[in-house]
Each structure stands twice: as C-alpha cells, then as structure tokens.
Image 1 (cartoon, rainbow, N blue to C red):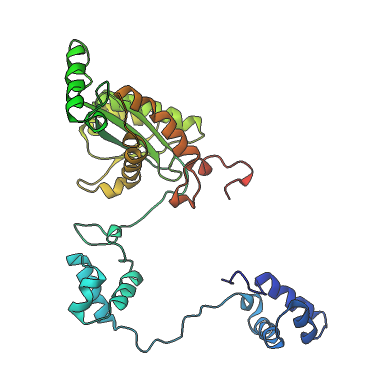
Image 2: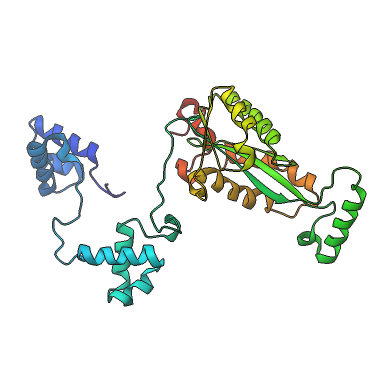
Length: 327
C-alpha cells in the first residue's frame, strides 16, 4: 500500500505508462510527475515485463529469512501458550528466547491474545458470520436483579437501600413483588447485529415463545426474513411450544452444544454491551426507570453505535443502506 505522501499510486503509474506509450521521452514524463528518471524507468520496465499487475505494490518481506526461529521451537512456544496459558514474558525464560521473539511467534500463529483462545481447550476461537440478514438469529436471556423503588444500595447506600427494598416488598406483597429478578430476552441477527430486546417477568416457555413472535415481527418490519434461530439449552428453548412457534413460520431451530457459549457468541457479546451501556450505565431509582431506558439504548445500538465488526458502522447499515451511505 502506498504511503500518504507517495508521488505515484497505481493510478499514477498507469498514467506514467500511458504517457510513455504515446511516444514521449521517459525523462520528460518523470519531470512532469515529480519523480526521478530511475523510478519512471522502473515502473515502465515492470509494466512491460508483468503487464498491469506489475504496477501494484510488492511485499517488502524478504525471500528468505535464515535466522527465523525453527518450526519445532515455534511449535513448543505455541504448546506452552495453549496448555499453560502463559504470556511472552513467562515463555521467553523457559525456552531461552527474547520476549519480542515469543510475541512475534504468538502473533504469527493467531495466539497473540488469550481472549482469542477457548479457555478449556486452548484452541483459537473460530469466528464466523452469515452471508445475509436473517440467515441466523441468536436468541438468549439475561437475568437481572430488580431495583426497589427509591433506588438500591448501590445508589443510596446500604442502609437506605435495605429500607427501600423492605418497603417495596411490603407494599406489593399482595400483587407481583418487584424484589426478585427481571429477564431480558434478546434476539440478535448474525449478519447485521440488529438487536431486539424485552424485559420480561420470567423465562418460561410461554414467555419465550411470545417474545420470539414479537421479535420476528420486528425483523420482518426491517425487511429481514428469519431462516434459522440459534439458542442455548435452557428449558424454555427445549420445549415443544418454542419449537412449534418457530416451525409454524418455517424457521428451523438449532441449539448450541452444552457448555459452549462461544457458539452463541454474538448475543453473548450483546448481553455484555447491554449491561455496560444500559443496565449499569447509571444509577436508576426504580426498576420501571431502568426498563423504560431500554428503548433508547436499542435505538442507539441499532442506528448510531459504531460496531467494530461492521467497520465502524451501525447494524442498520447492513439492513438498509440508502444511496450507499455506509459503503
């Protein structure tokens, strides 16, 4: 790739060749373009030898590297990384290598960050992405503790928080108590990362089935036809009712392998963002206040929040991209 101050890009090299082919002297063309005659002759010579492909930049990597670490030693470094989860500073003394060399070896083999490894097996996590919206939708549930009216102990202190909790429980004991848990049901499209969430009272099969019907309506309204749903092995997703709800609209259901949350990783990562940027973003004085804030978070996430996996664009850019705005 040409540096930002380069006199010649691929387009400029083609222009150089065209001017020389028209019969003009190389020295004159080089002076016009602000480059040396040797540089001009180099690109003309490459074009005559290799054609248009010769005008592109070549790799600066040397053809041979005599002092590169042996494959056996690199394998030993990778084995220590996978088996013992050691970093470069720990591996280097064991194998009598410079720390910088160990770091380069790990980076070369895709082991540079422990977050890229599956902790139980030490194998690199395989990343995948479906080719189009609706091909696969991840569905999951996040359990959150309810907030008593007036705020919890994190907001008003331990003593006042306990009083709020006891007062709220006593007031609503005859109806539905708010001290307990809320269940955030979420659905995330694999390709676009478009997300839909609801805060519900439980995680029963009827609740999960009803949530999916509303989530499917949301995706349909955005022009997405869902083909398959991926869930974990919670009892509500293993129920016949949830499967029938999917099959009634021609959607297939797939469940992850037990104890493999990485398979459902896109919604798991969304849950983490949900906690950081909504549930724990600021102190809330009631459970109702937190629930009402979810709609604003979802709008920001889908329409405005930059997503690193989408080249810094929001999820809506992969669903509806008017006039090539995000290309």
